[in-house]
Image (cartoon, rainbow, N blue to C red; front, side, top):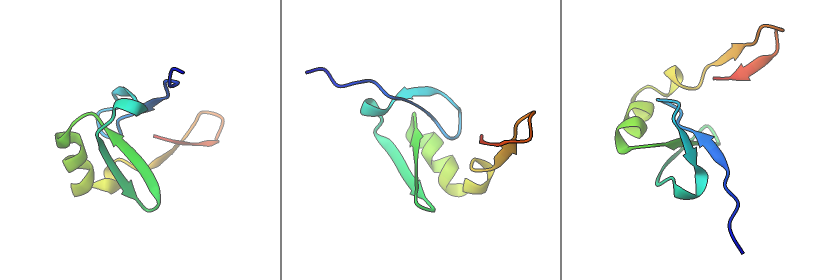
Length: 65
């Protein structure tokens, strides 16, 4: 049986990734973040607050950036 593909987004560079192929993961405040490279993960670890902000959408609903 073939594994389903789940697309996730790199928290730093926003690249779309296949969750099954991601090797760079980091958990911050109970949430898992995915990265395309060691460099993006290191940037996140240095400044997680820059990559975990919540931005309002046009209709006023909050959305993870």
